[in-house]
Amino acid sequence: LPSEFCGADAADPSIAMPPATIAMAPAELVFCGDFLTVMLAQKCGYIFALPVDPVELGIPEYFDHIKEPMDLGTVRKKLVGGLYLSVDQFCSDVNLTFDNAMEYNEEGT
Image (cartoon, rainbow, N blue to C red; front, side, top):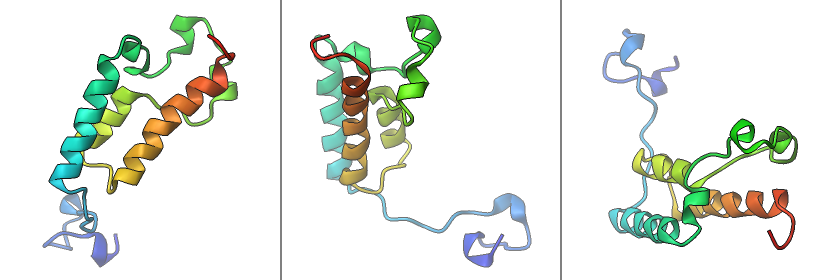
């Protein structure tokens, strides 16, 4: 690995670390976490809590239509794991969750 990807001991690749990134501020993390809690607590929130399972749901063509699947459970895992560097990234995945639902499902369902 290039030296900028290495930790204190660049000679030992087993301890290589990615470069430091700037994460979301604590208040942003709390806001986003609270937002997810409210969304998932809604009457139909459970529908968005897990990734779509095309086999279980009998929709084998799902991935033919949806190329970038997303769900609010995955969003929560990414948030807790510190994978969002901004609220905009978080919002993008939340919006993708609902955009996918609207794209795949017929109007009125």
